[in-house]
Length: 217
Ligand SMILES: *Cc1c(COP(=O)(O)O)cnc(C)c1O
Image (cartoon, rainbow, N blue to C red; front, side, top):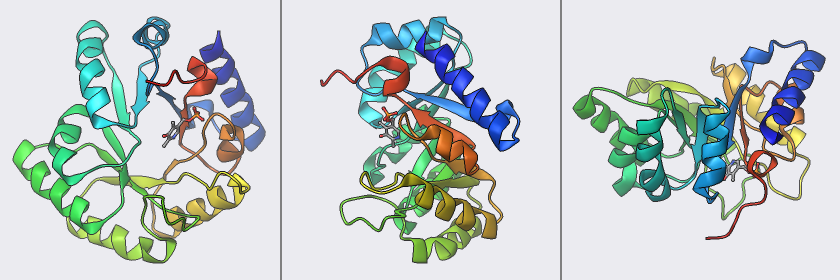
């Protein structure tokens, strides 16, 4: 089965990197996948999933959570201000915090809700115009700002430009995390998670390699 195959590849990549297999969290990216495929992976015992749209996640995860204990849900797509409250109620982790306004909204809602998901700051390592994420030159200041707001920042996240060697971006992200004393690194997808593990990824986001090609909705 694909899930076991990915787990074996993670174990091998960890071994080659001299890391413990438990140091990497596999986020199964279930966006746009038919419920039956997601359910099959839940039935296999996997509990950590990623979605990139708040609304889509809202439609399917409350139901799965009623049937399966211990679901750990990660938001890996863009976060809009007006969806922040719902996202904070639904997700255990948010990987896409990327601007002061969202950080302030999360801080205010944390006080109100009495809880806050674990946070990752998304960095636009390729400085791509169309891509979300804090620019590399602004990341140290933004992390400091989040800390001032007492936000639970776990680490950094990136999505490398498609046409570039991802390892350069993974290495850059690892360096930015290290100099800021952060130990979480959300990087690596179906095509490049082994390279991400070699460079220190703690959270890999794997979709199509587990579930098969996404079925367009
Ligand atoms: C869809 C998505 C993934 C998973 O992509 P695959 O190539 O299917 O593994 C990972 N991260 C983000 C942010 C995504 O949107």
